[in-house]
Each structure stands twice: as C-alpha cells, then as structure tokens.
Amino acid sequence: MSTPATTTLRPEDYGAAPGLADSTAAFQAMMDDVDRTLRRDPAGDRGTATATVLLAGSYTVSRSIMRPAPGRAQGLTFRGIGKRASEIVMTGAEPLFVNADRWMGVRFYDLSFRSTNPKSSYLYSTSTGGAQDWGWTNCEWRGTWSYGIGLDGPVATSNLNSEMSWDRCHINGAYDKAFLWSGMTPSIQQQDQFLNFAFRDCKVEYDWGDALRFDRGGSITVTGGSWIIKGKRADGGPSRFFYLPTGVHADSVQNLLVEGVRFEPRDSINQVIDSSWRGQIQFIGCTDDAWAFKTASAADDYAPHRYTNPAGVRYQGCQLTGRHRYTQTAAPSRQAIVYDQCARTVTGRRSKAGFLDLQGSYADRIRISHRDDRDGIS
Image 1 (cartoon, one colour):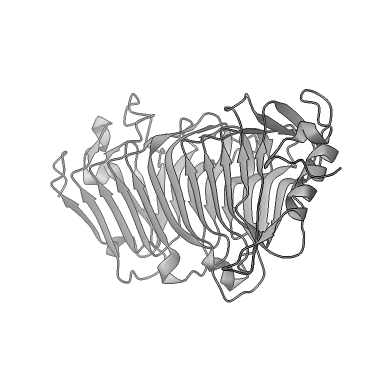
Image 2 (cartoon, helix red, strand yellow):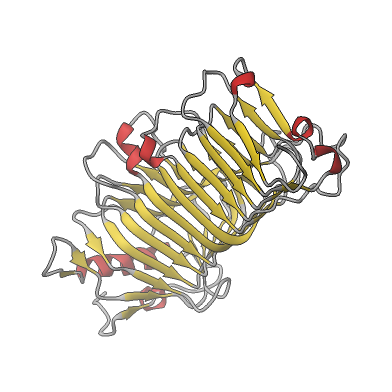
C-alpha cells in the first residue's frame, strides 16, 4: 500500500488485527515502507527514518519483522502506550528483529515482547560497523527464548554492535543461552569491539538462564535495580547474572562496574558472577542477601561469586552472602583483589577462612586484601 501521509506508522494501517490473528505480513509491509521513505542524511552517508512506529495493542507474529536490507540507516523509533498494553508476541523460531549491519540509533519506548517458542530470539545483530546505538526505555521481555539479544559479525576494522542501553526495563522470562549474548562467534577476534553496554535501574527478575554472557566484548555498567533469578535450569546447570567465560580478550574491554544493585540468585546453584576475565571488575554498594537466613553449614557450598585467574576485583561497601571462590591455575600477574568496608550476613562466613574459597595449583599466591572490614577481616 502507499505510505500514509502521517509520520506515524501503525501496523493496523497495513491490516494487522491486535489479538490472536497473525500480523506478520502487516509488520513486514510496514517496515518495507519505513525503508522506502528513508531520507538521505545531508551530513552523512546513511538514510534517516522519517516515521515513528506506534504500537497500541497486542500483536502476534511468527517471522522476523525487521529483515536484512541493503544500505545503512538510522533514527528509527518504536513507541508503545505502556508495558503489556503494547506487546509483540513471537510464535516462530526466527529472531523477531534482524539487524544485518544496517540500523543504528534505534529506540524502543513503553513496549513488551513475549515469546511462546523456545527457539525464538528477540534480536540478532550482525555488524561490520553499521549496527550500533540501540536503546530501550521502560520495555519488558517475557516468555521462553533461545536468547534475547545476540551480537555477532565478521572481521571488521571499526567498532560494531556497540553503545546499547536499557533504562527502567523489566527482563523476565527464560533464556537458554542468555538475555544479552555478546560474541556469538568468539573465534573472531574483532568481536572484542562489542563495547559499552549500560543497564540503569532495571528490574531483572527472570526464571532461569544467564542475564549477560560475554564470550567477546565488554565494558559493562550496571547501576541500580533489583536482579533476581527466580528458578533454576531443568538441565541442572547454573544460571548466572554475569557469565564471562574463558577466552582471549583485549585488556581494554574487560571492564565491569556494578553499583547499587540488590542481587537474589535464590537457588544455591545459581550465581551472581562466573568470570574468567583478567580486566577490572567492581561491585560498589551491592547486596546479595538471598541466603542471609541460612546457617553457615547449610551455605558451605553456596559460592555465588566465582573467579578464575582474575586480575583486578574490587568490592566496596557491599553486604555479601555465601563464599567467594577464586581458582588460580596460573601464576598471578598484576593481580589485586580488594574488599573495602564490606560485611557478611551469615555468622559463620565472617572470617577469612569461612568467607574465601581458594582453589587451584596457585591458590597460595592469590593476592587478596581487606580494608576497614566490618567483620574485622584483615
């Protein structure tokens, strides 16, 4: 159909019927019009969106609604009228959005996304520099997904899949891989350029899976909010808020800053962090008191913070539960692990021996210091 005169596009204008009817064709036709009406940015080499997409109901789709297209574009906005009042339900096994090195400067406001197919994903983004700068405000994810957002891409020479942010979002549901999976092809060194991710005042309360998994890339900032893993995986494996697996990374990308967050992993197999990074990791003013009511003997195997061959780790003003496990399999180099004015909620964990679980062939060389410790550890 012809492009509506208004700069606001609605899937209803293309035949969508909010409710149970499949609206895939309507969404695809609408997005085709978004592509056709791009204007040339006079100061750059990208097309610029001239329309905002407005969603005001619950829509069911079964295939990707953003599909690969030639060229690069920027400035697209999706708006809803509120979480769950505006929702896209994905029933198929494809990614809901596919950004094939095309869109940057994309924004989502006041929307929900729900999957009824465990093979589906929310966004697959592959980039050689064209996919950057996506942001979500007051959005929500529900249902069971293979992964939420997957970042991939071939060798390139510029930053890619970078500068993404989430403000006051609700991450619900379940994720076989992770909600945010960066570095889907970790053999590609350039995927270390997946950089600069910010979560601000989010409610991360999901059923199981990893919240953030970074096989490549990094530089993550998390401020405020409540992070809860409500259940556990059916296969018996752990769910983790931060999973930073072993890999070869550039020193400059291995940075995680977490500030003012309350963590609740709930089940004893679940973890706050499982990291093999050798960069800088900091938790400031955080709590993880889900097991504060347990006795020390019941919490002996509860190690929600785990590090393998770490370099820089710092906890400042944190209230901690369980044991912290450090596994050192190589001689430490440029290592500094610091606990500054921290406290432990379980009585039997308020000593160095009770709190630290040191493992590996170089366990006796791990460098840990305690400053102004509230439990008197020195």
